[in-house]
Length: 458
Image 1 (spheres, rainbow, N blue to C red):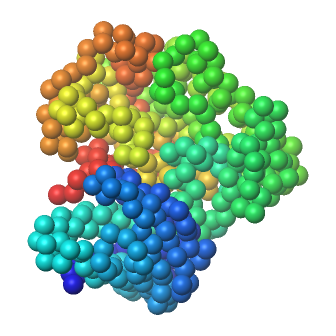
Image 2: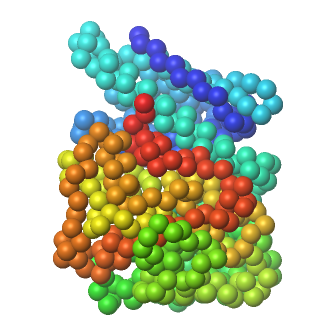
Image 3: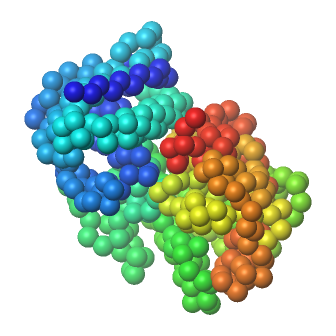
């Protein structure tokens, strides 16, 4: 029987640490982005006998892992034991140990045996031990990030509705808010699950179920067609615009007409507002709008919230930079060529790359729900970089050379206008308003963000 133990200091009391783990979103928040895992069954509550069921792949082989929870001691610990899965046996105890009033120790202790007896231990022992070390280093870091961001407004519990919950950011925000103890509901197109509190959105008719939006504290609007999903034809550009501007205006009008309006509407925007700003000079929320398609769309998008603002609802337009996550977005697209040693700068490499790790973006969205702020807020890390620096840093973390720049002419041929605007242009965007609010990034360093997302810990 092998034993693995991982202990880490956490920035919350033992009761808060335990509460985070006992809430529904924790099961989603604790799956590393490099693991191919689908949750088939969630525990309805963390109680003795509750079952979690996962479908996953190991070395390309699909399998189902079933774990049953037991010895549940609220606020103290719980265990899960494998009923079926890849191990001969697996017993995992999660413990939440006091360490003063504002900190605690998280301890994961796993006793396990590999299949195949001595052969399994000989050929798989070191690999499994390394995988567990990597996984639980990441899991403890993710837990620490979430507790860090939740601590900004201790004891505050919000009723929040979120749109765009099938997307990378929206789905993560649902789980993040749930682990923070907030009442979260989805704004969904098509059939709404009223048992879950879903808010129906008929996109064709341009209507929202206003009754289910009554009495909320916050609404977070993230929906919109992906700008980098395909080449920009005239029809695609219209779809990008229409998926943002029209629904935002419809939602703002619906909220304005409620009897019990939300305190805040948090609406996604993008650093595309600033357009192409060659050179190292930084821009911030006080800077003028750039020129071209993306800045014009961002301006329309932000103005579409006017009905809510005019009705006295505090409105925050979060201008989001390049989101760093191994689950999707730019990083996921860049990994295959970089792993083959084909990564490098794009075009001149001098264009600005204003980025933010996904965990910190969730922290920003949580902050602006409660902070005394309105209007534009740049959701970016404190140190923007050039495209060349971005590629060199990713190559360094992956241990791959970044010596194969992609010429501007190739970008134009392969991606057309979309590639020109997204890859060859950029701006160095400063988070001036976040800094004024004393926001504390969990991952302010690009190197640390890449290491966390890829599980490349030193």
